Length: 261
Image (cartoon, rainbow, N blue to C red):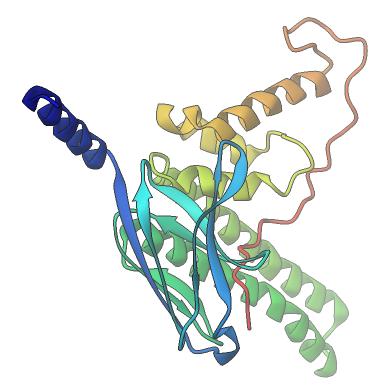
């Protein structure tokens, strides 16, 4: 092999390496039943969920490492059960799994994701406590009308805070992997793509990069087409013989699925 050929191969390897992102995950768990279990890192690639890496839990410790051509959101699995999301990005990523909490820290996007999850869980806990508050007010003999008004007002406040949290988190992360991930979480509660005031507001602020994301682009395009049909128009804007059936927009706000022991 000629010297020029060797130099070319070294240069090519350097370019490939420089365009790749390395990640390293160190995990620990205080849950003894996890010892001996096999964990998997999985991510969607080409619209398919694929294994990126796997390892065994030994004395409460586990680790993953690899090279990525782009930052992506993956999920930590045990067998076929998804445990928690992980942003695979350059840096030292730390996963903690114990009876009280699951978290991923050490890199900017993982810190942001789990700050969002913590805030979302706090709102969920406040909402779940409303039933206890209502029962307590009944036992105290408070007027039923007052109970309904107070509980409904607090539920509305929580719903607004939840919506604002999701909206702000998506907007703050338009140009990284978290934005499309949270947008998919937001829209996954609907049976098919629709436009809501929240979605329209987000898209009115969206960057070009966010709009080009495959999921975001497909969802928004289809939702706009569905909106035209519901208003009695074909996709090209001409009047349609009949509008589509009304869409159920009463779906609950998305819940972040962070498993509890």
